[in-house]
Image (cartoon, rainbow, N blue to C red):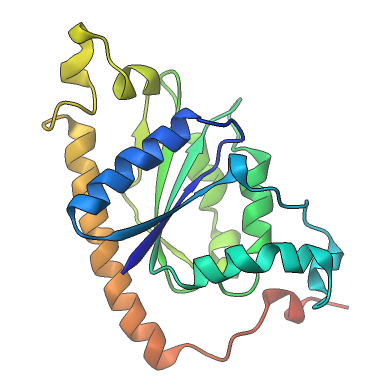
Length: 208
């Protein structure tokens, strides 16, 4: 079983990437293989209609990432909240996922905020139409890492409210969420193997 973690921030060495590494550590302790996709390090073109053409440069750039996603069993999307929105690279990345890369796979969403917010990534990514198009399954219990700086790199007086405290509610919720994610991934993998239709790009169904 492999879980792909997508760090959606554009910033190199971002807090979102640090959160991804924190989650990867938890998965490692569960003996789950991980694959981290850091969108800050991935140079993909913005989606265009050229993406529909099998011989296009845009599609050729995407295919290595498509294969990595297809080989994954579960997903964790880590997105910062920027002015109440998700980073544009994340939306562009999801537009690229039109070849059933994420179909029939469970996903845990993790919102990241430097302050007390962090709810908007969940709203932006999980709306009904997108879920139907991509065919993925979101866990109803998502995580929000608020005041991420203090949580990741606490001062001595902040240890009890940080990731370094094993009894911190986020550590407990993360462990529970990841266990549910892996159980659901195994069940969906078994079901999809028996029932998944022939692979087809969602764009082949578009209106001409």
